Image (cartoon, rainbow, N blue to C red):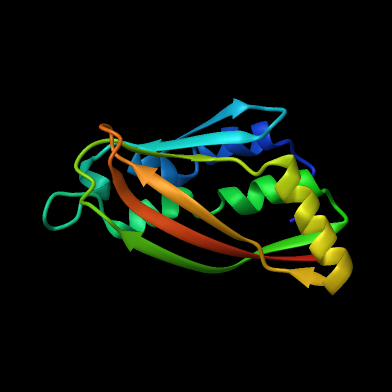
Length: 152
């Protein structure tokens, strides 16, 4: 784990684009803003991520958004903090019938709030919402991600 933490977010994303589960499903990850660590993830509808009725498989929709809030927060907080995924819930809103996408960002204000909560309580469990959109802007799914953060 410490090897990966020493890599920049840009390098981690470059490797993740070739990670077999993402590569096979057609997931593409782009770092839109390196200084703000804004990430956009997209996934076209393909044979390898279709379900029985011809729409996006729910597991593929979840996996395309799974690690990004944790990765961004780990990078922004630095090596003095432990960050884990604790809990997730996915809410399917509409069948995904085309390319889907999601954008991830954690503001500096949110990071400072997390630092304050950890300093005050010893740990903190921030909740983030990832919204997955279809090509026409319709909401396909929402994923709640609860992280667990503690100072080392």
